[in-house]
Length: 114
Image: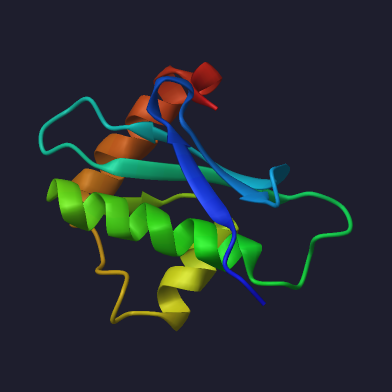
């Protein structure tokens, strides 16, 4: 099975997956504004009929790859992203606890982030 095409819409905080031009899933995220910056995953959704094909995993993997390219950690507040990170420690370094705390604080203060 081919990997989905993944597109980052940073302005909307959406990392979206497409198969043959059809939208099939998303990781909602935000950029932590406090130093040090981080990408914070808050929600992962795969559209009905597309589950079980590795789309969510491909999305989370790309979020971690983006963060690595940008030199920032990922804070996986989304339960799926957190579980994926636990299963792939070689691809998903653990964010420092102070970054996790800052991400939770920003999310509580701005619930409309996702």
